[in-house]
Amino acid sequence: MSDKKIQVMIVDDSPLVRQVIAQALVRETGIEVMGTAADPLFAMDKLRRSWPDVIILDIEMTRMNGLSFLRKLMAERPTPVIICSSPAATGSEMLMQALAAGAVSIINRPKFGLKGFLEDAANDIIAAIRAAARTRVALPGQPLATAHPAASTRLPTLERMTRNSADAILSAGSATVPRTADKVIAIGTSTGGTQALEAVLTRLPPTIAGIVIVQHMPEQFTAMFAERLNSLCTIEVREGRNNDRVMPGRALIAPGGRHMLLKRNGAQYYIEVLDGPLVNRHKPSVDVLFRSVARFAGGNAIGVIMTGMGDDGARGLKEMKDAGAATIAQDEASCVVFGMPREAIKLGAADRVLPLQQIPAALIEILNRREV
Image 1 (tube, helix red, strand yellow):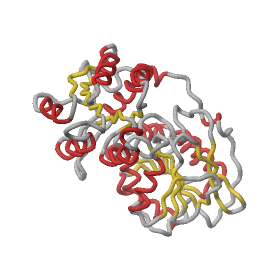
Image 2 (cartoon, one colour):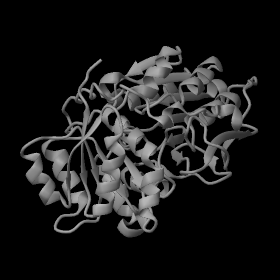
Image 3 (spheres, rainbow, N blue to C red):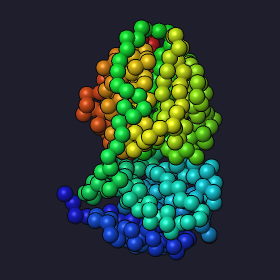
Image 4 (tube, rainbow, N blue to C red):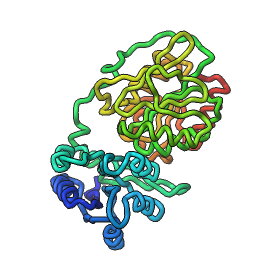
């Protein structure tokens, strides 16, 4: 196991933020603050001397905003970046643009009560840093970099917490599902999923089967993320609402902070959106969606698990396969984080393991051959 610590740079114009985060990281084994900067221009000066493994970045700063800095980083030397910013001050649209530009995650901080929040959220910040160090970012068309060797030296407290399974929302069980003309594609993803979903959905024709998606994302962003994809795709993409029909040419994204389940009325499919406890530390949870698809669509479905940290969705994909669905896992080489697909593959849940760019064609081929 490597003794190399994860080197972190904090770029924020708030001295309080820099101080509190740095103090939290000093106590953490395997992580080291290599530097702080009050704005991107100061940061770039320090980056000429040494480069961090992970950058924690505010968006709203003087002289150069964080979004411009992020885009510069990704164009010149792609680096895992965690955005730590307030939607109230920055605007959710700006944070959504940061995700699209390559940020690996966002920590939503409040506009007021900042010191207490940062102290309470120390474990979340540490978990985000370790997750970011596991990610592999790259320029378009270039191979993904190798994850940092110290990223998994010790799981933070957040990752050792007792967690709920999909049983907390929908009990395990199976039902005989007759083959129907309506088909369903269920997709689950997390870190790196914003880019992966764009790569898949923009390559699907308007006649494609109805799609239901869980992307781990804060609740302020799923609607805007769906709107952005809708502007890029020939299919309709939007945030799912309770009782929405699942129909050809439509993709429904689970709203952040709510679970989404597939349900069936006769031969037609629709979604149920509901509150409930975290499942696998997530809400929405991929396992919850996949279990509901296994139960109500069975062999009429295709399940796809893509880039993401952790194992949410692995068991659900296995349930889908056992129910007769065709299943696909994204391969390691094209994943930003191989956690979720890896765990599904280990369970024997994936019929096929494919590079990201081959998944759209595989979906079309499976539907055309009626292998679902």
